[in-house]
Length: 79
View 1 (cartoon, rainbow, N blue to C red):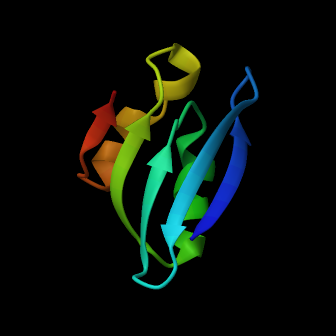
View 2 (view 1 turned 90 degrees about the vertical axis):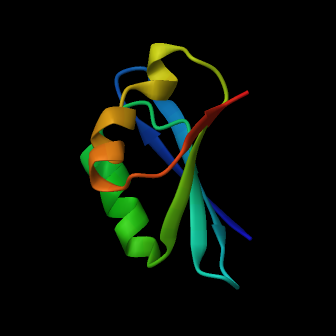
């Protein structure tokens, strides 16, 4: 497993790409802002995004979801 952090947005929120490097799949955690940067991180990982996980619903953790869903139609989960 590889966890890649990316700091995004005016709140400098931490977004993470959690990758199962043996299967080539990943999940994105807390995509708060700057979807272009997040898309670039996912594409550079050469994995297949399977899910977006949200730790909580504050704006700095959910701001890029709509743009990411337009690119990858994956489930979004919030506890």
